Amino acid sequence: MNKGQLIVFSGPSGVGKGTVLKEFLQHRDNVSLSISATTRQPRPGEENAVHYYFLTREEFEQRIAENNMLEYAQYNGNYYGTPKDKVEEALEQGRDIILEIEVQGALLVKEKCPNALLVFVMPPSWQELRDRLTGRGTEDAETIEKRLNIAQGELKQAIHYDYILVNDQVEAAAKRLEHIMESGRCRIVEMKDFIREVDQHA
Image 1 (cartoon, rainbow, N blue to C red):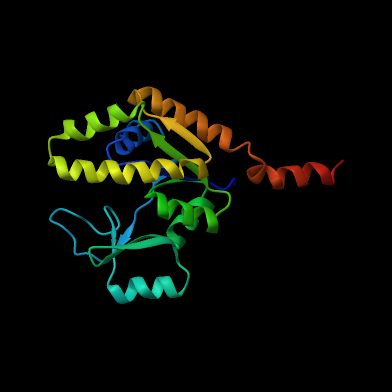
Image 2 (tube, one colour):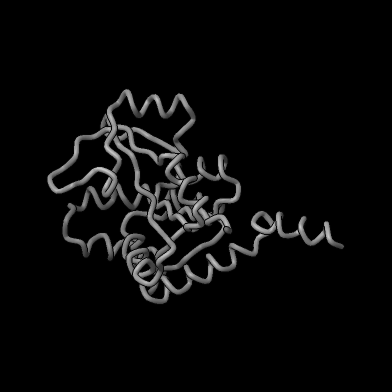
């Protein structure tokens, strides 16, 4: 069985990452979104191992000590991170796994998993990103400006990614993500075993 592919999906708030992934996953049986772990309390309607893996602080820190987190960070006093064992188990079963995480976490994953395919989602223009954030109607002007300031810093990190995906239209962006994943399988890091096998019979 071929091992699955690890895809790291990042981009600024408001760029439409979740919308693109929802469209993409509708037509893919062998691709899953990674479930993050957190120490925060479940919100009404949230289920363990569906929305998050809900851990105690002691359990989370034990995983960190055992090097069983691909990446993690603290927000508002709670830990959030990606369980390493869950991802590796899915990959060994031949499933492709997508991690929708922040830029800082993505670069940490790249250090630990050089084969990971990093995709950075960008808006077609800066004005479009501003319009999308404003169009949500859920945040005040100050919060939007803070998000845009953060986005500027994230855009500077895009050069460390393998691919740029411009989300100008959701269906088209989802199709391009499919092409990116197909091309990712042909990278040298993915084909080393195949190269060795052919070489042995040369």
